[in-house]
Length: 127
Image 1: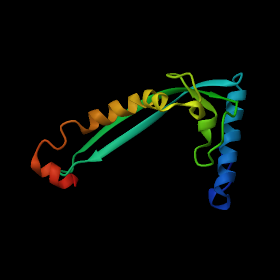
Image 2: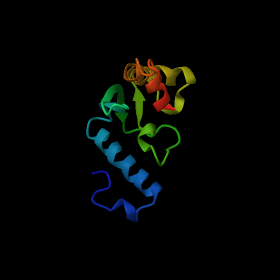
Image 3: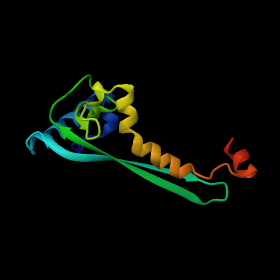
């Protein structure tokens, strides 16, 4: 959608980032400059016995039409949203802000990895 049908192989990373930035700025503009949104981070581990464990984390943000800070061509949306947890754009995050923002990720990973390594076989296969 953001690339409007253009094959990404024909674009530079900067061109892809610019198209993504404009697509999401336009989306926010259509909603008076702000859109409630969230990041859904998903994690999965394949266990030695073939079973799987998965977890996900939700990080609520507000997407805006305002470019804030330097645009990262690989992650252009980071300059368009602010965290609902901190009330700050990522360009303005302190280390403490980043830790607060990532609490749901930390909790999901802790849940995902609990009990791993309790037996010697699992420990050896993890190395």
